[in-house]
Each structure stands twice: as structure tokens, then as C-alpha cells.
Image (tube, rainbow, N blue to C red; front, side, top):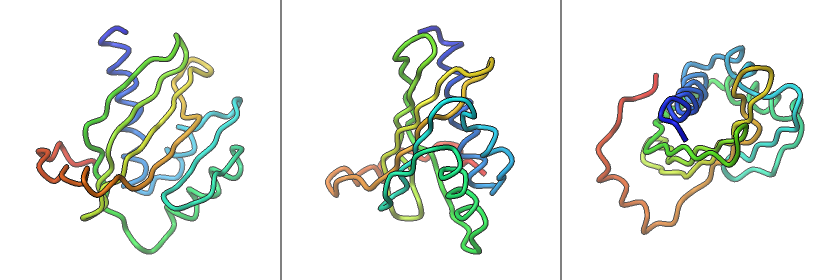
Length: 138
């Protein structure tokens, strides 16, 4: 995998977290595939299948009156094929650390999300508090 392609995927991943933290629904919608099947599993939630269900979940989350602080930590990009990549990272919500997987596919000349899953990590892994905080996505 070239560094340029890896940087491209990591930038799309960062765009996802930026859309989340800025509550930018239009940006969030544009990040998700429109031609391919998509799915999403929010922390503690049941699997959502199809673009309509996934986008509706983001409408609810992003329109919530409770503002969420979120940091994406240690993102690692991996290419599964020429047009399929995943990013595994940690998410920090206040004092809670989650683990996340974001799967991107190449659709209509751009990388788009086809799956997001986030959930809690085991307590012994919560020692991530020692990881230096990266630039905060705002």
C-alpha cells in the first residue's frame, strides 16, 4: 500500500470523525456509500442494515441536544484489496475508550464508508490513558 493511498484513507476516516464532532449531517451523508450495501453498529446497539437505516441513526445522533466530545486515537489503515480498506482505531468519549472499525470502499471515484462499528474495549486495555493525545478532531 502506498503512503499516498494510506493517507487518503486516513483523511476520509478523519472526515468521518469531523462530521460527527461538528454535527455536520450533510458531510456525514456524503461519506456513506449510496450504491453499495452499508451497515453500522453503534456502541450497545443492534446492527443497522441499508443506507436509509444508517443515515437515520446519524440524524438522531447528530441532532441530539447532548454534544459529544470524541477523539480518534491511533488510526491504522489496512487495504484488503484495490478498492476496499479498513481503519481500526480507538475512540475516546470523555473517560470512556471504545474500539472502532471503519470499512471504506471505492465508489464513484471516491472512498466511502460501507461499515462502522464501535464498542467498549476490555478494562485491561483501558490503560490507553497513557497514549499521548493526538490532535483533537473538532
